[in-house]
Amino acid sequence: MNADLNHVTITGTLERDPISCLPDHGTPYVSFTLRCTETGPTGQEFHLFAPCETYGHASMAAGELTAGDAVLVAGKLKWTSWTAKDGTRRTSLCVLVRLVKRLAPVGALAAIAGGPRVKERRDPHGTQGPS
Image (cartoon, rainbow, N blue to C red; front, side, top):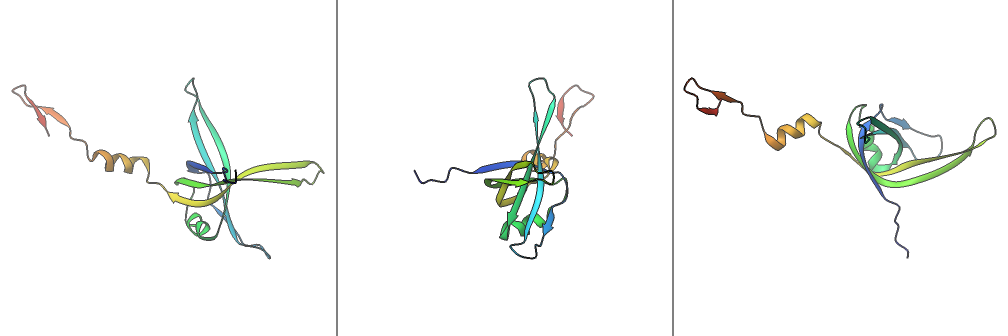
């Protein structure tokens, strides 16, 4: 089986502004951290912080994002390892992003989906109607 099964799609909130990296040699890229929030069975919120890297066209879109933006990213998982200053071997998993889409704020989506809410009011005669 030669199919590439390494694919992830994540939605979340940018934890801080993206960082553009222009190395002396190599390809420029943009890195950022995506915060994904999930509510556990007891109602407590848990946060997962997913480090992301992007190159090429996706990096231009990522460079325009700011902290707090709701985004969708799609790409694949990238595993790296290195030797830390103290000599220990370290590993990291990040998302190698190929697609970045800014999502509309939650309030904007509610307004688009349902339009403005119509308040009900009662008239003095006891009938109801929209205001």
